[in-house]
Image 1 (cartoon, helix red, strand yellow):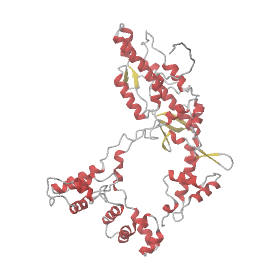
Image 2 (cartoon, rainbow, N blue to C red; image 1 turned 120 degrees about the vertical axis):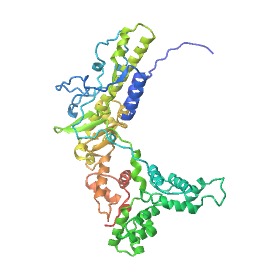
Image 3 (cartoon, one colour; image 1 turned 30 degrees about the vertical axis):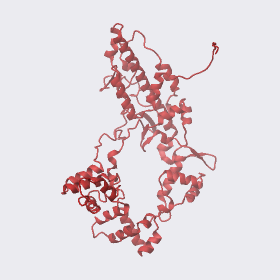
Image 4 (cartoon, rainbow, N blue to C red; image 1 turned 180 degrees about the vertical axis):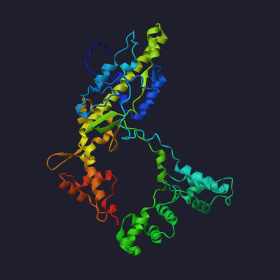
Length: 502
C-alpha cells in the first residue's frame, strides 16, 4: 500500500459548548430550567442566588423601549424591535474568552442583569396556581383510613386490604374474586382454613359501603346500582332507575331510547326523568381523587391589555435570580498564578457563559411570544374562532430565527392570557381554504364545531355532513371526513351518541 499526502476542502458544522448550552436552556420548561439552575449553582461556586433584588435593580428609563431590561415596562407588540439570529448572537457573544486581568471593580449585575420584570396588575392573573395547593390523599389512602376505623377481625382485615389494593384510580375493582383469592393463599393452612370466594364477596360488600359511594364495584352496572341503593327510598323514579340500570344498561349506554321505551313500557317524559336521575350518578367514583396527582403549570409569558394595547412580558416568577459572586470573582485579580486561580477563572468563565445563555433564552422567548401575540390578536379579542393560520416558518421569518429554534422556544412554554393558559404551540395551526380564496385556521374550525354541537338540539344532534353544510354556508369548505376528524380531536362523540331525551 502506497502512502501519499493530499489536501481536501470541505465544510463542517461544529457547535461550541457555549452554543450547546444556550440551545439546551432554550428548550427547557420552566420547571426543568429551575432544576438546571440549581444543578449549576451546586457545581459552580461563582454563582449565587440573590434573595433581595430591590437593592441592585438598575434604574429604568421610561423614555426608551429596551426589551433587554426585564424590570422595565414591556414593549407594546407594535413597537417591538427586530430579532437577531440566535445562533450568530450566541456564537459571537459566548465565545469571548476571559482576559488574564479581569475587571472586577464594577458589579456583575451591571453586565448581566437578571432582575425580574414588573408583575402584572394585582388580581389579573394567578401566576402560581400551586402556591396554595395542599396535597390531597389518594383514593387508596382514603379507603385505608376508613378501614382502620371499621371494626373487623384481623383475618378479615387482611382480605379487605387485598381488595383495596386491587381497586384502580377510577374506584373500580380491577381484579376478579379468583385472583384475589389466589393472592391470599397460605400454604401453611389446610384447605378448610383457606379464604374462599364467599368470604371475599362478603368483605367486598363491606368495602363497597365506604366513601366514595360505588367504590369497589366490579363493573359499571354494579357501580351505578350501589349508588342508587344509597339514595333516599322516597326519591322519585328510584325503583324505575334501578330497573333500567339492572336490566337495560346496554340500551341506555347506546342511547337506544326507542327500544328502551318498548322494553320498559314507559312514556318518553317518564324515561326522561329516569335518565336525568341516572345522570346524577358518578361512573368513576375515584375521579374526585385524581387531583392528588395534578401537575400545575407556571406560565413563562404573560400578556395583558393596557390602554387598549396588548403588552407581552416574561413572568417574573420564572426568571432565575442568579448572579456572579463579586467576592469570589475578585480573587482572580488577587490570587497568584496556580491551581486556585485557574479554578476560579474556569468557573468564572462558565458562570459568564451560563448567565449569557439565560439572557439569550429570555430574549428569544420574549421575541417569539410577542410575534405570536401580534399575529393572534384576534384570538385575544374574540376567542378561538378568530384564530389565524400560523406555522413555524411564519414566526421564524419575522424574528429571523431558524424554524428549529422556534420549535424549541414554543415547546412546553406557556402563555397566560385573559382567556386562559395556553401552550405557545396552541397558536400554531394549519389552514383550510375558503370559497373566496382566503384561509381559515383549523383551530378556528374546531372552535366553530364545538360551538355548533354545544348549541344543537339534543333530540336531533347535528351529523358530520350537516356541520359541513353549515361551515360551507360560512364560506368554509370542509369535507365531511375532515369534520369527523376535528370532532374526534375534540372528544365529541358522533351524533347518534349525543342524542338525548329532553
